[in-house]
Image (cartoon, rainbow, N blue to C red; front, side, top):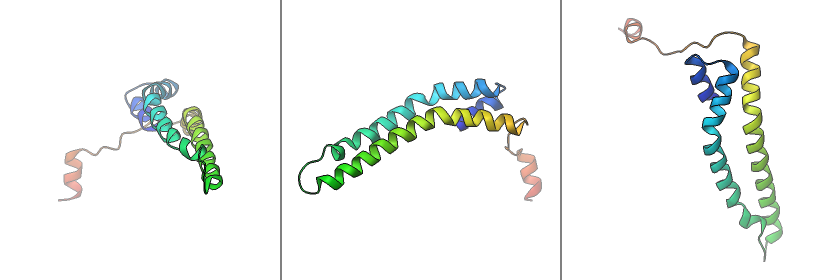
Length: 107
């Protein structure tokens, strides 16, 4: 989200507008990846038989942790991006060096 927001901001969008657009662009890939990982822990949560207690506890921990991290990441990443960008208070600068400048540095 931050990388996309930064690129949009370099293209001339405002801080909040760039963060919201980045969230729209990245929501589906983030959610799909997280859901796939979380779904992979379901067999651990529903385990039975020998050693099921340890597998179940491990599954619940990973399931809840990924769910929490996904929700916090989706909601708090844009908030912190906007807050820190406004706190910094300066324009973003692209760090791409011109070919002539690079040739002058390394003859």
